[in-house]
Length: 89
Image (cartoon, rainbow, N blue to C red; front, side, top):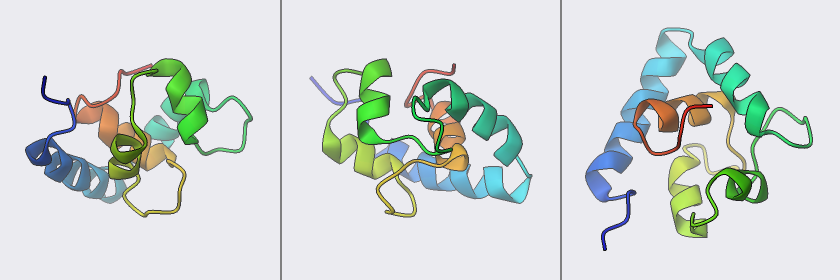
C-alpha cells in the first residue's frame, strides 16, 4: 500500500506553503493549527499530530515540516491541509 505522502504530493506541500505565505494565509492556517495544538504554544508537534493521525510516521511528519525546525507552524499545517495530506479541522 502506498503512503499518502508520495513524492509528487511533497512538491505540492512546498508550493502550497509558498503560496500561503505569499497570499497572507497565515491567520487562517494558524486558526486551523490551534485546534491541533494541545499545549497552546502556537506550533504542532509530532505527538500532537499523532492524536489526529495515529498512523503518521515520523518521516511523513518531517516531510510536512518545510523549515525543518521539528514543529509545524500554522503555514505548514495550512499547506498540508490544502494539499490534502492532513484533514482540515
